[in-house]
Length: 185
Image 1 (cartoon, one colour):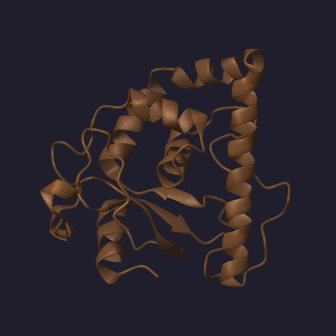
Image 2 (tube, rainbow, N blue to C red; image 1 turned 120 degrees about the vertical axis):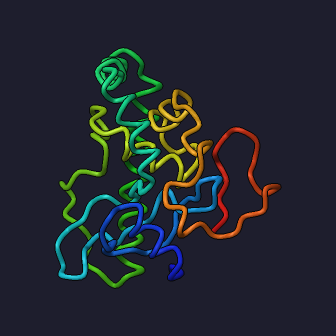
């Protein structure tokens, strides 16, 4: 279940009403959601393969800058030369699909077709770091390229929340170091 204040924060982040929300998958150190979990099908039945959706515009901008640097080409090239990395990325792909199928079952929805993509280009290429970072934030340790991208990002939350009108009260002591990783849900 997702609280109304979180729905309002996500709407402010996205600039529109969110669709198919299942819950907050990860919170930024500022206390706001930065990744939400969405249903595999929208309320009208349309397939929506993105299970973990990055909502924070500051994180999205930082990731967009990283993508523009050409890092995704380098990451994709490494898949062909590093069997361990390729196996870890394949495992991330499988994890994503398994979690998406479980979400469909929990929601009483038809699963998405077997041949529908997971997210971010998995398992054969790196196409969208936003999706891979969202997966890694939601399931720490699950996505090697999401983890690598996070390590390359500046602390996007340091300058303050992206939607200050919606910031829930978060004790300063609840923020963990400089990692940006804390699940307050």
